[in-house]
Length: 255
Image 1 (cartoon, rainbow, N blue to C red):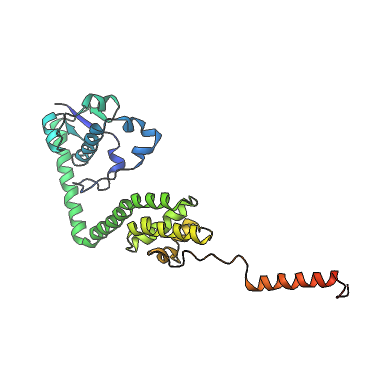
Image 2 (image 1 turned 90 degrees about the vertical axis):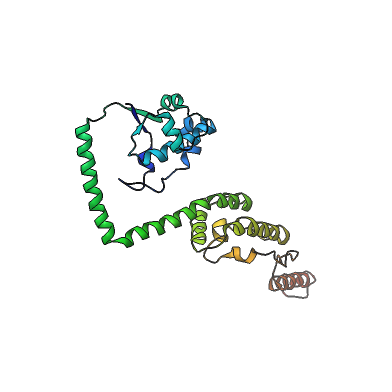
């Protein structure tokens, strides 16, 4: 009976020694040069690999080579390209299968460990709730990455991205609507900048603690008001100096 394991499962595993409700799937697989093999996979095979990662997380990364069972477990409607996945080392054959006695010993040990963990969880149920709460917040930020990308492109002034992301996360965690910020606020702000002639703020400042973005949830009514380039005091001083110079030229003022 043959078994195999799936590469990278350890980096995706959040819960240890139990049935995980989710795994961590990193975006680097789609844009990091180190994962160019993954990026070149056919889309169907990418989806199958994600399903195999999920299956591996629930089988302690030891999957029996039963094609029909695997396809059923990951809900595959098309044949899985096992040959390609083995060739690219995403699937790795397990050669040193333990004997039944050793397996039975491991199962007994795992059961004892599970019992001990269950006692800890029963004694501290709030810990698990806190993890779920933290997970929910993390998911919210991850989901809103797509809206941050829209904001970043729409805003146009691409500077201090790391600071901008920190301010973005702060806003999203407070419960604000990312779609409004990414689409409505940026459009209204860009329209106002173009019409008013004002200098555009850094994106981190626009999203910063002063929440300038809130001023542009709706279009500004002063779009056509051009800012005064000089204050009244500056203009008065210029006029005074101009007149003084003319009087000096005409000899009305002593040098």
